[in-house]
Each structure stands twice: as structure tokens, then as C-alpha cells.
Image 1 (cartoon, protein in one colour):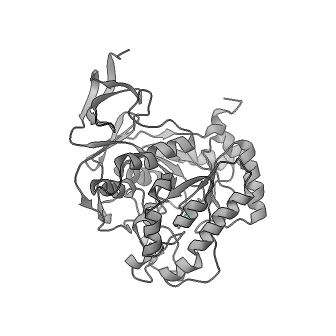
Image 2 (cartoon, helix red, strand yellow):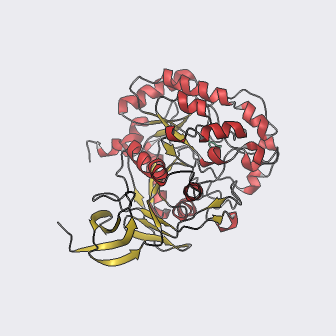
Image 3 (cartoon, rainbow, N blue to C red):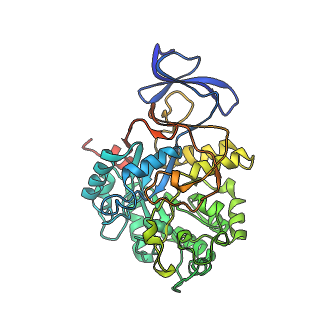
Length: 423
Ligand code: DOR
């Protein structure tokens, strides 16, 4: 039945089918598609491409004792300014999230500061309280370090086998950082690539498949080569930096471009780009380090680059150029991650979550001084992008024309929390 009134109506939205419709939103979800009903607020979308809000399922929000790098406020403002309305935080914080108590404190910190939807993953170490965190609302497990990285110790094969079995018994999703590290101390980006070689990543992906129980749900984080994508038995995540950047784009010892897995050479990057259809999820692996931390000798610089705010804008520039389809961008940034995580998807059907970002049809150039992350730099400086003008979270206009309008934090717990017998 047609609702009498709505909280918000998005007018003149062009749907993926090409049909133009009005979307009515009540209590944070789509209540009607078709002719508009009376509403408290109306937004005309005829100038914009309306996308469902993106779900970035791989973000290092830092906070706590690392709040000088990023905190939940700066990080989530950066998210919405880039059309991301739900972030999944990684547990390699200081200290790592390995107990229910730490997870609950992390949820509390996010509730106080975040401006959009958020979820928090459980840290996976041999002594971690996996069951406690699952029941306390962890979204998924990991990233699980099958190789060492900044703020993450690599786990040995026996520990991995044991932890995978425990996660599988809980019915959880294991998200994995799979790499092989050969021990050399790199002094340049090319050496960093060789120290964590492309073939090693594919081998590590296959090894994880052998260590995990047969039917287990596996998600491979930030795969950087076509061979790794093909080797994965599970869902596959790729970052914008591995799609759009090669190490040859930077000075040989530029520490800003140091990241794990490393940026590859141009040919490897192009091959990854050519398997677009086999990629399930694009996520940023937003790992902001300050310029002061990065501007040191190559060997001492932490790995990690910021990318939350630029992720969808870079993809929208590719859509504008006709190199990617809009539907594939929506699928990989919003619908597939929602499905993998088991949360309702944002979109254009009654009952869908009312998270949207409205993109103009104009390219601009990325200028890090205008971005909202605390670190103040971007490896995509000067790249073309399309940033959203208006962003809606749960039916609330949270961001418009460069400014935060309102906070709308919402915690998304994982399936362990929903099935907790005490709830
Ligand atoms: O480069 C990276 N930095 N890769 C990771 O997996 C972790 C991240 C971080 O937390 O800084």
C-alpha cells in the first residue's frame, strides 16, 4: 500500500534499468518506489547519478592511542565525503582487539564519534577470545595475518589451521591477508615488490585454502595479482591502489607508496585490472600513517596508504570515461560486500537500506589538502575523480556540498551477536 507520508523523498532518480522514479524513505529504509508521497524533506536527483552507499569492508580506523593518525570522526567524515556509508574496521589496533571487553570498548568509541554506519572485526591470534568477540558483535574475523605486516604478526601454518577450525565452528567469515615474505630488507619500491613477490602471494592464497576446513567461508583481502585472484577459493577483494597505481609511478624510494601487499609493476597491474569481472569486492585498505612517520628512510617507513575517501570517486571517473560499467561498480562497492557480511543492502527496492551518494557528472582532480583524513596526503594526488555532492545515511542527509550536516552512527553487529541466546 502507498505510504501516506515519508521522512525523505529522492526525486527523479535514474535507476539502473534507465527508469526514472521517486524513492520514498521511512525510518531509514525504502518504503516506496514510484510517484512521490508527501515528505519532510525532498532532494531532487535529476542532476546526479544516485548510487547506493558503499560498504568499505577493509578500513584501519586507528583511534585509541593512534588517534593522531586517524580517529572515528575524521575517518568516517572521510568515508562519507567519498560516498562510503558503512565501514568495517580492522582489529590490528594498539592494543589489538582480542577480547570481548576490547571489542565493546571499540564499539563505544565508534558510537561516540562516527558519523555513519560501522562494524568491527575480531582480531585473530592464538590466545584471542574468538567466541567472546563473536557474541559481543564482531562482524567477521581478521584480517588474519598469514604474513607479517605493519601492526600485524604473521601466524604459522599450525596456528592458522587451528584458528580457521575455531572460526568455522562459530560459523564466522575469515578475512585473510595472504602473502609470502622472503626476508630481504627493501630499500626501494621495486625491492619491496620482490621481498613480497607476486608469486608468493598466489602460493600463500593456495596454502590458506589447504589449511582451512573445506566448506569454510574465506575472504581474501587486497589481492594484488591476477594469479592470486585465480587461486582464491573464497571471495576476492582488490584495492584501488593495486588497480590504479604501479611502483614505476613513484620515485624508487618513495615511502608514501610503500604498502603491503606492495604496488606491482605496470604489467602486473594491467593484468589485475583485466580480471575486473572476477573481483567480488573493491575495498580501500585505508591505512593512514602520518607524513612524519612516512618521511623516514625506506627501511623504517611503515607500510600502508590512505584511500577511503578516494575509492568510489576514482571508480566513478572510470565509469565517466566508459571504462567500467556503473552496475559493476555498485555491485563491487556496495551489494556484494553487504551480501558477504550478511547485512541488508542499500538500494532501490522497498525494504532496502536508505544509504545513497549523489554524484555529479564532472571530473575533478584529487587534491589531498581537500580530503578529510587526518594524514593530509594521498598517493592518488592529481588523479581524476568524481566526488559525491550529497550523501545520505539511513535516510538522513549526513553530508552535503563539502560539509558534514549531521551524524548518523549505526553499529552493524555480525551474525554471532544476532544469534546470541541472551538477546
Ligand atoms: O600496508 C598495510 N598496512 N597492509 C596491512 O595489511 C596493514 C596496514 C596497516 O595496518 O598499516
